[in-house]
Length: 114
Length: 113
Image 1 (cartoon, rainbow over the protein chains, first blue to last red):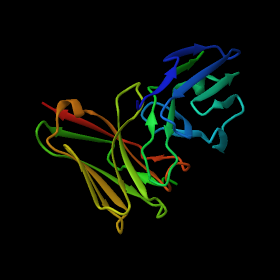
Image 2 (cartoon, one colour; image 1 turned 60 degrees about the vertical axis):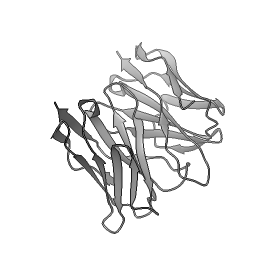
Image 3 (cartoon, one colour; image 1 turned 120 degrees about the vertical axis):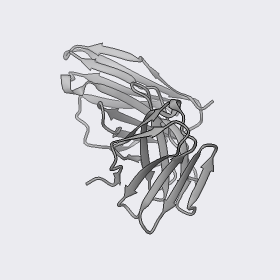
Image 4 (tube, rainbow over the protein chains, first blue to last red; image 1 turned 90 degrees about the vertical axis):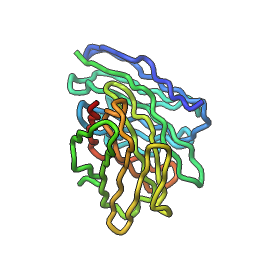
């Protein structure tokens, strides 16, 4: 199983809404990531969790709140977003070991803020 | 400052010919390099990787070459197929898992039948 599952696939939310993006992997990976991708741009790192602890926050606004309830799950809580936050949000995971390994990405959640 | 650069935004290749996608990097601490393929509205799919201790890695039609002294890597696809048409991202990292991937801006490959 090399799958990272993200739900929902599409989300439309108003600027006053609260919603959550979910990410799940069962590969035993201990590093999990949130990336944001705008059209025709590379994925931009938002957060890194290592062994369920937040290790990197790339100066992301507080309206994005990550959570790692256990080693298989990663959430991104959204509140009071702006239209410019509309993007594809990608979750990825990577095994932490002595050997370099690839990151596996989910299919993403296409978020539209109206 | 871009640490991973893909200077060609797009590339068109005839079916059956070789596609060569290039990537340069500036961070000498990078020791692991990856190529991802991405279709619109989908997550990146891992293609092939190379560690800095190697200069070539091959997997089927895909070969990645690494020139550490030039801080340059390339992805060769041969023969190219129409299904290879996608955006290809070069990525790099400094260690085995905690350091996140740094992506280039991508190259859109179009394989013409």
